[in-house]
Amino acid sequence: MDITNITSFVPPIRTLMGPGPSDVHPRILAAMARPTIGHLDPRFVDMMDELKALLQYAFGTNNELTIPVSAPGSAGMETCFVNLVQPGDKVIVCQNGVFGGRMKENVERCGATAIMVEDTWGTAVDPQKLEDALKSHPDAGLVAFVHAETSTGAQSDAKTLCQLAHQYDCLTIVDTVTSLGGTPVRTDEWGMDAVYSGSQKCLSCTPGLSPVTFSERAAARIKSRNTKVQSWFLDLNLVMAYWGGSQKRSYHHTAPVNPLYGLHEALVILKEEGLENSWARHQRNHLALRAGLEAMGLSFIVHESYRLPQLNAVTVPTGVDEAAVRQRLLQDFSLEIGAGLGSLAGKVWRIGLMGYASNIKNVMYCLGALDTVLSAMKAPINAGQAMAAAQRVAS
Ligand SMILES: *Cc1c(COP(=O)(O)O)cnc(C)c1O
Image (cartoon, rainbow, N blue to C red; front, top):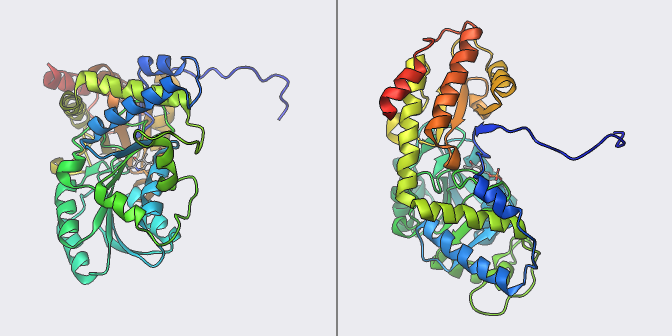
């Protein structure tokens, strides 16, 4: 590439209603533009302590080992697996979408065996199937599952799954990347042992950070390993010397200083609103969007009883080129919605209402834009109904 004419990158202004990243709150962007200071500066260290306390609030935990991993959600996932899994272990992985498949990959790359408990995409993890697997594999030491499957919009019953795992002496690894901040995540109450999330979904921060939290049981298992953690960067024994409590911090890696300002601000915003209020807001806006989409004639692929309010997966009307619709939405409305993943590719759209983006303005904007584009394409929908239906629910 000839670099002569390259100048500053100025991104377009979008409305982000896909599976993440979601719209970033302007307060967070402003926080990230503040001056960079040293990552061992006492003022920065104080900020890190506040950040830990705010993360404990968001996760619903008193776990001492609660930190943001300096990398995206996938690194939080990997942190949980590489620290808790040793070669030769057996891990039960519940899969009901794309991200459960990545858990399997993680287990195998740790030199362990994954026992798969499969559920149909779009449904929740079936506790009965987990119990059957626990019974037939008494030597398994861990159960892993995704709380909120972003690939389908289904939410599993984390409390019940964790209870079962503990009954059979297993610890749990739970993916809360899409749930944290949007729907209840009660780490201590539900007995989740290793939990990871992401900054760019319902926390509305920029991508690139992964909050994690580990129970005392999990921390004890990490300390008692008889093999070294295969990843130097993600080894929590080392990371803790950097993030740890009162003792003097020692250099491990340079923390992403400005992104951490952003996460701090995101969590302050969450605390100001209140977790319960945030969950209620996500539900309210989901109901308005749902009314509009259903009035248009689109249907949800996930049953109401375990449908995520922050990730709405709906079927593409017959004969419609789903990619062309998303392209028009982006071009004409600067609006991003998500495509289907894996076995749902080409069949569904995934409309996110995450964090700051979960508001009635976005609901109306998305319904209006979708109605306009689909009507122009002469798609088989009930044109002109969606916004009125949403309005009836919202008012
Ligand atoms: C987005 C997501 C991830 C991965 O997070 P990245 O920040 O993209 O690495 C993992 N699990 C779930 C459920 C997700 O939605």
